[in-house]
Amino acid sequence: MTRGIQKVTTAIGDFFLEWDGACLQRVGLPGQILAGDPVRGDASAAKLLQRYASGGEVDPAQLPLQLADTELTPFQRRVLQALRKVRRGKTVTYAQLAARAGSPQAARAVGQVMRMNPWPLIVPCHRVLASGGGLGGYSGPRGTKFKQQLLGIEGVVVQAPGAC
Image (cartoon, rainbow, N blue to C red; front, side, top):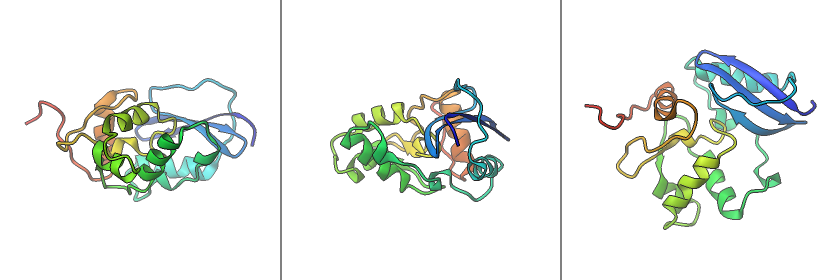
């Protein structure tokens, strides 16, 4: 496989996977188009995303990802590795994730790692909630509404701010 962008059409919109050979470099969420030459990409990754978006009992966090070969800091790598262990249908707070990454006082820094996450859904930042159990933020297109939609696909119900 060469370097380029794989478009994956799903029930919740088009995802864009940026590949460099067999390594997944970035994930573009619906509403976030990644530029580059089109490639066939990984058929199993496309099928998994399509099944997930249709409510299938699959977990995109199971897709292989080479975190060690990236330009992440050791803290960022620990946070993302800890988050990949949070399974489908489960959530964690920013503070809990900080503790799991070995830095219990770094909840705000965890939020920054989530904001820059180049692999949303594969590194499931939508599963990270605010300390009170609310949605918290979501920097992807469509913001917290999309985060709530992803959690809903996984059977997690979280009230949006201001909801009754």
